[in-house]
Image 1 (tube, rainbow, N blue to C red):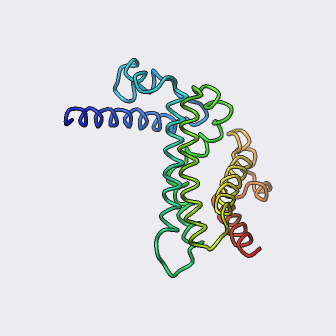
Image 2 (spheres, rainbow, N blue to C red):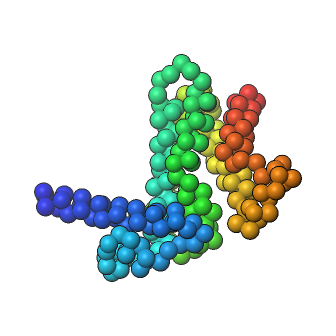
Image 3 (cartoon, one colour):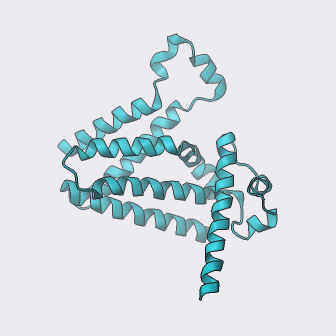
Length: 213
């Protein structure tokens, strides 16, 4: 039993090393996915070792994306779970934005999810990932409903629409390098607002408006 436990811990640590190496490479160039060979080199592993844990580079980055989503839901869960007398919505938005700041690659990877990552995943693996995400969403949504006194299903609506708003706003402001240079001219300031500021304002308007309706 002890030997199996150690073996399991070693495997988890090795898997984490691979994901950490993939993250470092992606942060260096988030416009494309590094190869398995590059990830192996960055992790100090043989390429064949990486394939013991992941079938493709897309699976590596989908696993990384899944971890980011789990962390985001945990952050939101912690806000609504903690007893406090102050404005829970302000604390939620502050924590939500702070998580996105800490994981800038989340939205970049998510933008690749449908077109690159998911189309190259085994259906069994994809289903398992989606079920894990669904479980996290429903648990957090139920907590939000309980804390805010909402009807069943309302919490999930709020979470799904919040992320859709985040994704859409990020994609609309994710200008390619050549366009960023063009839009650096002050005359274009109205159409290149700061993403974080815009998202904060949009979230505040959406949540407060939705809860008042």
